Image 1 (cartoon, helix red, strand yellow):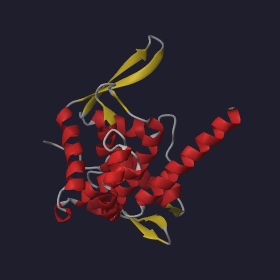
Image 2 (cartoon, one colour):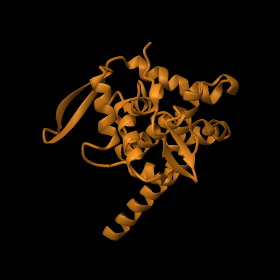
Image 3 (tube, helix red, strand yellow):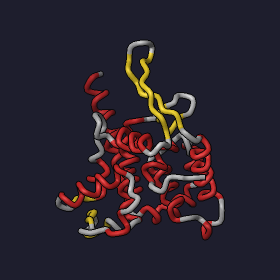
Image 4 (cartoon, helix red, strand yellow):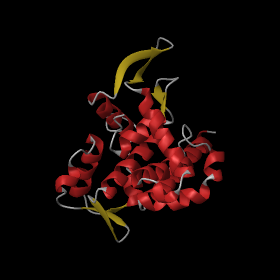
Length: 222
């Protein structure tokens, strides 16, 4: 089975809901995919940490080959910017428009033939994009990798699967792990987190900020 190599593509597919033909929780998913791109760059050695900030290497060479379009674009942005914290880079994920991670990663997967897109109007009024996976077995295999990372011998967990699972947990991706399962596997998740470096903590912080902002908006409107 031909599985995607890059973490943003893997996380998008894990967030996909076959029944709705869409991903779940787009607002939080944008942050999760941004975190996945940062982790992919970190794992490839294209980013490193200096003073708790993400710094890009000037040249990546072979490490840049095979990068998904979204991660490659983010790498360019980090190279052109002064150093910022991991929290800052995760929080910079756009939540609307064509530049939001959900749309960029989805379109990259469509260009590679892993999924197809078609326009639809919900209730005959609201435009939505329906997504169909070319091979539903790919998502099932990725979910099995998460299960294996949580339950199999730790010494046999692939580092990429460890990083993917750490992000699934930090991003509260309920389509893969619900709250009870996250609590049940809390000890193992702590051991998997180092595979994703400082990003899971930054993702948790960004999600907390986003939730606090939404709560403040709701209180003001109420």
